[in-house]
Picture 1 (spheres, rainbow, N blue to C red):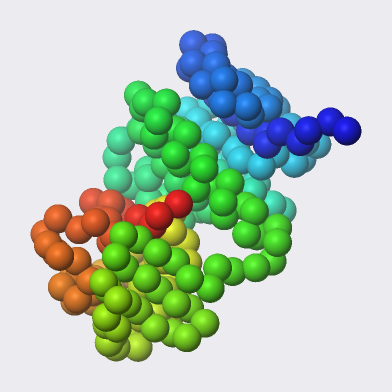
Picture 2: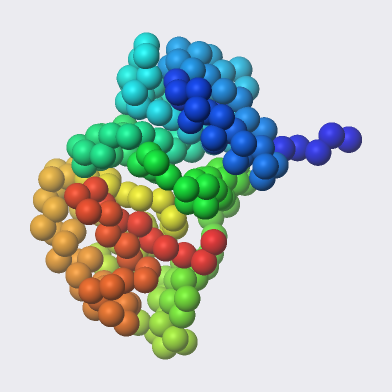
Length: 233
């Protein structure tokens, strides 16, 4: 029986970058499929059903944002954008269009592999149809089944909004969520631009959960974009 290897579709037009990523991924046991254009990438995604897609935005035929939109019309496969575009608007747009993560070029092999592990974990949970009942990060534990939060073994009492925010982030541990995504989920679509709501409650959460709110360990700020929950993955 042939051992299954997780497959990664790499949509990237630069040969040197494709080679760099291919060597890293193959060295860690992944099966790599390459596409140098957006059109070919869409075809490969449809025919191969990869576990994760690495997507450059600056493709020669179709912009990567449009590729993301088209993919999200029919698949929920994790998409990690890899791009030299550093503007906050590009990152936010990609994430709001359905990308799961965003890496700025150049990046190291360790960071790439860590993001892929997070994506693979979410993919496995999607396929199993299950949700984790407990998420841990250091001395912080969130028990979703009991709707309880513990810090160093002591229960922390959160307001309903604080708990909704924390459970949203922890339920997507390792994944960056944009301000608008979080606002829509917690307050509703009419509040998608009310970032001040988010800042106030995230500040309150940090004061309750972080030893040093100015240097958070769990509730990580992605400047101008959103937040990420750093769990023990």
